Length: 443
Ligand SMILES: Cc1cc2nc3c(=O)[nH]c(=O)nc-3n(C[C@H](O)[C@H](O)[C@H](O)COP(=O)(O)OP(=O)(O)OC[C@H]3O[C@@H](n4cnc5c(N)ncnc54)[C@H](O)[C@@H]3O)c2cc1C
Image (cartoon, rainbow, N blue to C red; front, top):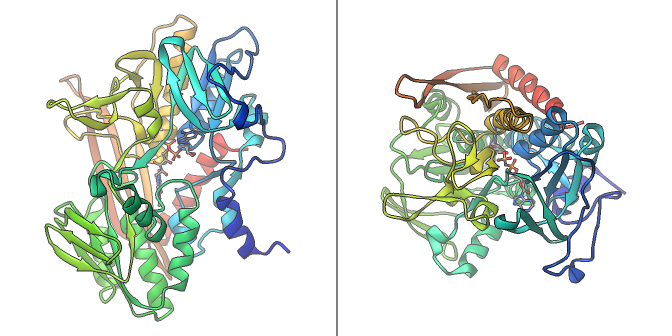
């Protein structure tokens, strides 16, 4: 019998299985270096999009809409779409699993692009070829929207066993995969004690959301009278963004549960003995949400498109044109979403949010259409908006808004507005926001 609980556990865990009707083009064992799949359709350019999350699904729909004769192929490793936005609210059942989990074939059918459930495994950019677990696919234009990877090597170097142990026992749940389900169950089964939450150093995915996660977990423990403490180890000197709103929530709603520790840069993580050494002191824990540093998705590294700093070390993020969103070394490759590199020395990176991924994917679709039709490419800037739940009863949220403008120095400048006063209205706005986004790229 399929119960709500079965569904909750089985669906994301099924990542890697094909949905009925999805294209299985070759048995993985039979794929050779020379295998080519997906013959071209139509006379238009071939646009291959790697990664079917917020950025990739938006790009697939809108490239096809902007360039109707294009042969658009979206490659995604997961059989279903899982939305990280709203997933903190799902931890305390503000939304159910069906709200976050979506069929990917329906939008492909509705908007006329092709979906391939496969792992992107590499690139031969000189041949304009993407390698996948199903075979090679050639392209005219490539859009990379693979999101982020967890850089456990910053903590453990070559010691992969410790990285794997950490991922399994103290999942970060910051990428669309089964870790979200593991985290929810862990939270529901926690009987009491100290939970440590490490925040990645900036730039990282969705800067305000780790604090939101701490709030919803604290609300769960408070409501269910579970004697839990949450220690947030923050490498930054203060909470941000929406620092005042979060500070008020921590102090007024969860004074006995949440402790925020600033300047807690990680020195060493010992997952086996449940101990973390930081520049702000050492911490023992009973359980933990260990978020390592974030970097651009593996696919950007495999495409050899990672930037280098002044000392020649990898920046961890794509080396790209801040206005055109193309790779600096390859104008036929666009980078969309969280993998994007530095935009401006005024503020660094765009916030790594679903809102920005969606906005950039729209812009890239328009710019690509301009290019293909021989028009002048008009550079555009995104905006950003994020709503964060801080209280479960009454349900109240805070928010942050960013706008961007081109300054006289030719650089992109950022304006940030924190909305620190928690209200139910902001949560209502959040639902309007996400419905609008889902309607934009799901079907
Ligand atoms: C808890 C949480 C809360 C958040 N809340 C918000 C919010 O309220 N508002 C907001 O705007 N943003 C929010 N975000 C951030 C948002 O989820 C990301 O910024 C957004 O998903 C980025 O889009 P993307 O396309 O770059 O990456 P993703 O959406 O992660 O998509 C990347 C896709 O690429 C696929 N992929 C990666 N590598 C491969 C490969 N080798 N082969 C095939 N497929 C591959 C992945 O499976 C994934 O589906 C939140 C994030 C988290 C974790």
